[in-house]
Length: 266
Image (cartoon, rainbow, N blue to C red; front, side, top):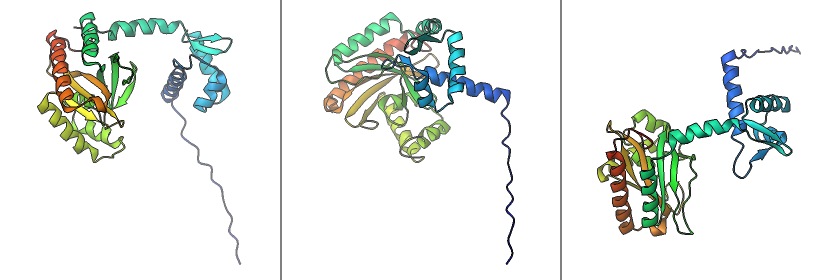
């Protein structure tokens, strides 16, 4: 009976380049800042360790760097958003704030239709809410400004994807709950939306939620944003959908006629 000898071989992982290490550090730092929310305005080192899975020494190093650059501020209970973020917030507000007439139009639309008005722009495989006017009704749909939603469903997605190449639809479909085959369904939705001049959805992303959206077209003729009304499906009857679509298309045309390449400036 012979016995073999087991030999262990250590395989060394290739060392990360300085660029890779830098990108990873930036991602980690942004992840820490992303832990700050309205519900949790102060985070402790322990919170960060538990949420990120990073070693405490790594967290302390990252927090120290963020604090030195004014992006975090130490308090007795942990760390809060630092004053350095004010400058970025000011720049973001200036760049993304809607013209007064568009803000006024959204308020009037929400009051007239009694549903929540949202303005979305596309960001790769997501749509981002950049403005909102809430419905005056107690039961209403609310998406916070800055929220990213998937593009595989929803009235606004059907509008924003009008000019999307097949490769983008494929990527969106692969990341959806429906799988790669969903790309053909999305294409059919987009074609129907283009013919009608507006998009609608009923329970596609969230059961009981409906929406109607119209495109805002830039000077180049491409869709730059989607203006939508959303709320409980029970209130989105066929008659109401037709009424909402007419209102949305009218306001979207008014915004487009100002000659904006985006809804935020000329």
